[in-house]
Image (tube, rainbow, N blue to C red):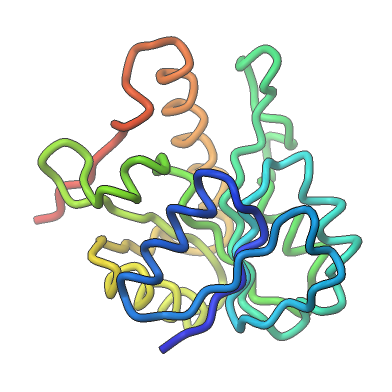
Length: 192
């Protein structure tokens, strides 16, 4: 059984907590009013909007050393919905990994909406969580949480693949914001 700390109590934080709970894992939810509360989990999920990550890292960076840190952000311009806000050869996850060199940073959950995590379905398909990172043990630990919660997990590769996962998330969000797909829908993965 794993112990997660989720920083962020919005829709995504709640949905990820529910997935972990279904798998029998313990969860610590930390809201913006819990800055003084220590991070207890071995796996820490940053379930905050990308612009808030810098302050979370500044406040809690030292306490994240040695932990698996999961970045769920999609670094897009929320005013225009026309671009990602990180350099074309980088990703939000790469920036977080650079800021937390003693943590094992993994990109995950950014290609799913809270509704598909909560229901475990994208249409008739089981929700799939794509993940990318350079630490195989960290990805395996996160995949175990995801699959024990009834979802599928696919290792999309190294940390370099976080950029592509952010592009998928960007497309999905802009489609939903433009009412082309529902916020309870999204992309499904068929393996096999």
